[in-house]
Every structure is written in structure tokens, then in C-alpha cells.
Image (spheres, rainbow, N blue to C red):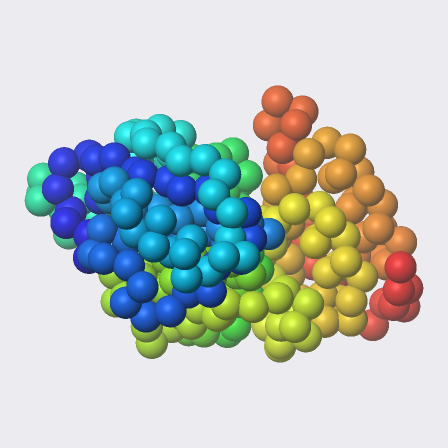
Length: 287
């Protein structure tokens, strides 16, 4: 349980890098255990030293191999000192600043409480900010009954879509810790009636009916998604997380399927974001 005080939910992070996939069971660790970032290997996070717990874990799960451990301030892991900021019509603030009476009940901004935990995605990255602008633009053109947010991360874009009036938003992330963090942020904003978070593969949910799809993800995953009938069936799309050369390939792929890019954002000729619309009556060309 986070104690929202000071400049973040944790003062320091104790990170243990283990080779192999952790078999996580209930009550395996003590209360200082924060979470496990699972990819091919395992990264375990604690709020205090957990050397003894790791030694015990390695004894019970000999397929795991200790690689390294680190101790760093929370802000260093996050890559920034996360504080309240405004972008467009949104006001995003960490919950530990509530005690400072920084929530403004009379603001005309859409306020979003965001606890990033161990997941990247506070809204300060250029691609996330561009997605927020694209969402604002999309909301001004039509009402979205259902929004699908692929690679939801902290859930920020899903929450923003709900704040803009969408009654049904589905956020999906393959990483369990990201999905858990996004779900916590949904509860934090009391938007459980509008936003649902799921842990799973984008390929398994792309066909779900939605008016708008948001995908701030890696090129490899996006390249596959936009070649599916599920993507073509969406009325509007926001695609981001692309670097220059990748963006050109995605744009060419969209053009081959006669899908229109309405607006493009570029930062330092590196990060690219697309907003546009599909037309289901167009000929579908699988790549």
C-alpha cells in the first residue's frame, strides 16, 4: 500500500535482476515487496533491502539465476521528478500531492490522478502528450462510445478518454505489472464504471468493436496490428511511439490500405504520432 507523502510513493527502490521467469505465489515475499517486472527475465522491486528473501527464493526456484542488484532513488528509476502539470485541457497530478491541496475543484481542466508506480508513462514524454492532443481533437469531431487503448501502461490515455466522455474504455497491456498499475489508477480516479483494464496480447483484442483505437506502442507490434481486419474496422485511430523511419513505413502501410492520416505530430524529427480515420468500405490489403 502506497503512503502518499513527500515527492513520491517510495524513497528508494531495491531492484533484483534474476535470469529466468519467476513463479510468483501468494505471500512469497514480505510487505516490502512492490512488484515484479517480468519479461524474459525477472526484475523484482522492494522498498527496502531483500537479500535474505532473494536467497530463499533462489533456493526454492533453482531455475532462477541471480544476475545483479541495484539501489536507486525512486525518481531516478522514473527518470524524472513527477509533479502536477497541465497539457491542453488535461491536468495530471500524482496522488501524493493531494495533501498539498493542489486539487482544484473549480478548474475547467480534466483532472487525472496518476500513480505511475514502477511503470513508465506519466504524460511527460512527447508521444504521450501528442496522444492527449489527438484525443482532444478526436473528441471534438465525434462522440466515442467505445475506446480501445493498446499498450495502456499506467492507464493515462484510457483515463483521458473517459474524462472526455467515452462511456466504455478498455485498456490492455501484455505486462502484468503495467495492467495492475493501470487498474489501480482507474480506482484512484473512481472510473471503474467506464474503464476496464485487462492483461493480455494486443492481437487477441484488436477485433473487439470500438470507435477509436489508441496504440502508443513499439513499431513491431503496431506493424502487425494495422494489417488486421480488426484495426480496419475502427472509425478513428491514434498511433504513436514511432521514430522517423518507422513512422514512414507505417504511413506507407496505411496508404496502401487507403487509410487517411488526418494529422501528424513530430518532435525533433524523431517521435511521430498519427491521428486519422479508416473507411471500412475500402479494399482490405493484408500485409
